[in-house]
Image (cartoon, rainbow, N blue to C red; front, top):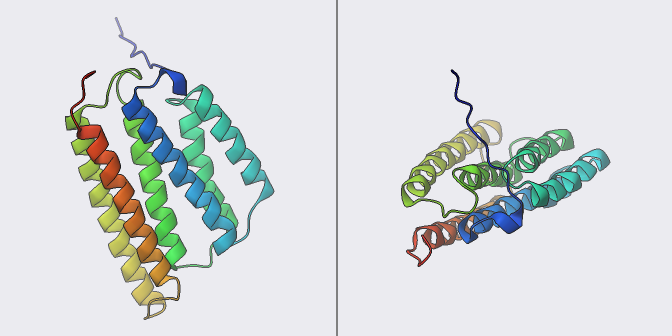
Length: 182
């Protein structure tokens, strides 16, 4: 006898506040990528429509199809835009995609109405941090190899990453703070 794992589907109204906060962070990171596309390259009308559909689906099914489509469309939007190569925008987008994936993974982990556990948050926080550091190091190596100097977007890149790190630390603090309902 095979036991099938039941996957819970939930709208944003069904989510615990921890999961809702993570979903907001995931959507904001996806929006950041969408804002970066016309700044760094050129926008694709089909991708904009798909992004809008994905956002609508996230409201209807925040732990399933909508969340997966949001991540895929966000990543493909950057690829379809035809980036100019190794620049500060690339690192911002890579970090935003990492945050998007990590947050949506935590939203989908466990029952939608329950809080996100501290152990799970710590585990995924460590994973995201390691991948983020490796991504930044890879970007630095690629930048050094391709241009031998920091582009003009370097200051903007550092500022955006510090802001993103601050938001992630705040989200982590909010998720690991003891509350009365968990």
